Each structure stands twice: as structure tokens, then as C-alpha cells.
Length: 111
Image 1 (cartoon, rainbow, N blue to C red):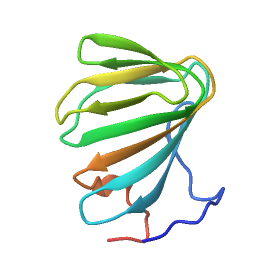
Image 2 (image 1 turned 30 degrees about the vertical axis):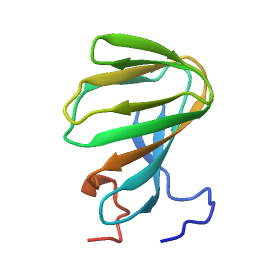
Image 3 (image 1 turned 180 degrees about the vertical axis):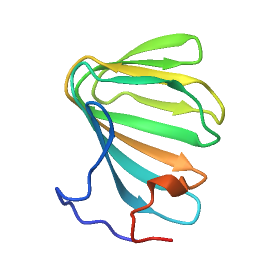
């Protein structure tokens, strides 16, 4: 699969947080998150391993009991079932890869 840059296809995930699935395969899925200053991603967990990279902006990322000050170029890996959340300090863009595939993040046209 190949994904071409486009401004269409973003979904409203939470207040101040948009997401777009960029590409996916049988075992992984890559998502771009656009997050606005002041947005909160509540602490949660899921069965997917999640690997991320902050492209721009700043945020506080909680993984388990540890809080990280995240700057552009920083990356993380969150294990399956590990509780995590974020507070967005500046408008930010992050790329994240999930494994196994998160079916709820597939484009609407995919079964």
C-alpha cells in the first residue's frame, strides 16, 4: 500500500484531536494525529502495541506511572495493555504505528 499526502480524511477523535490513518497492512497501521494545545487524551489502555514519534509541538505523555516531556524528534513505545495518556502543551503532530491492526481505525470503505 502507498499513501499520498492529502488534507482530506481526518476524523475528529476527541476534543482538540484529529486523526487520519495513513497506511495499513495485515499486521500494522500508521496514524497521524493532529492535536491542539490544551487537548487531553485521557488515560486508557488497549491490546495494541503503540510506537510513536512526535513530528512537531510539545506534550506531556504518561506511560504507566512515568510522565515524559515530549519534544519534536522524541519517540516512544507503549506495550499492549499499558495505561497511557497525554496533555498537549502546543499544537502538535504525532505519527503512531499500532500492532496488531486497529480495525476501528481503518477507513470507512474497508470491511
